[in-house]
Length: 434
Image (cartoon, rainbow, N blue to C red; front, side):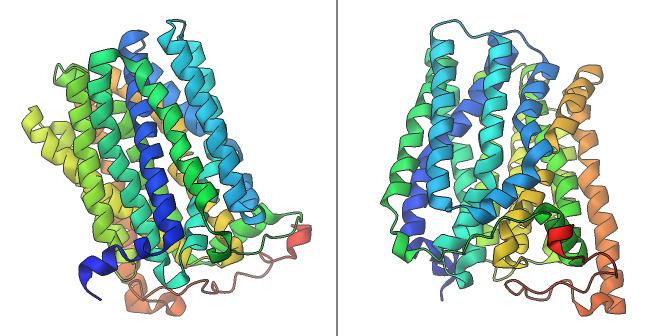
């Protein structure tokens, strides 16, 4: 198969193609709202970097507290029907934000409340939406579908801020929220248009005690999954923190307006689309690619933070987007391919804890760091975290390769639902009693 055809192979599946189109519209609206909300808090409502960090933390806090249980829900429910409900709820929340802003009644505490509500809904929606990819495409296309889903997310990351920056300048933030509310109709229509008979459904797991602990033991016993989640936590805490620093960097370091902030966000998004497409063209995700993209992401973060002028910062931010999403796509595909189908929702929920749940820990602290030092130094310093993770896991991977640890090579092709190594005695008790 030609490279171009293999990169977009999953789009030949009708259900995935419909879902892809609906998500492109909806996620573009979500990114418009994300950009507009940060600008609303920072400029319109007079909040500082710490307030922007609090908003990011509130959106992620539900996942940190309850995200693991959302994975159990994902493994139990009919995913298509559940997504209809979660997407409808998020449309209502976006509409409330639009009405309050356009009427001039919006206050900072209202932004906090609505953001927390969105975080609660996202907590349930994300593991279901991520595992739903595996029901729309056959197993042989799963890695490709996951990577294209990441490319979709980041295409929206380009389109949404590009439109949002212009809309903010011309008519204000409230219109961005209104567009986001309407955009959910596209994904709802695509979900209702899917052919249920063509889905590769995984039977829901029965209710039982200890299903979250069962997933934790499963990850602990599988060294590749465990290392993947730890390295993902190190990288994504920086990705989440960078979203807090970026609007402050635009305003203070480059004396910018909403257009400058939008341009910086678009640069990250363009790079992210490229990174996701590179990952989509690869036959199998590897630990080596995780290590390389983690280190490269950290280096690019340092370069973007220390760039003296905007013309140098924009290319660095493009590389930030490319390396971060190449890492995230590889990490996601690796986690899905290495998880048994009836465990996939819970494993991805645990991974989601490392992706989204790190924001409440990092975002306010990084916002304070940006105010105490400068946004430049805040961005440069946090870039050292993924560099350190790449060094540690790179050395560890090399030692395992030389010693043949666990009999698994770091770059060996991954097999769907591979059985993890046997856990130490006492770890694997009966799930119902855990």
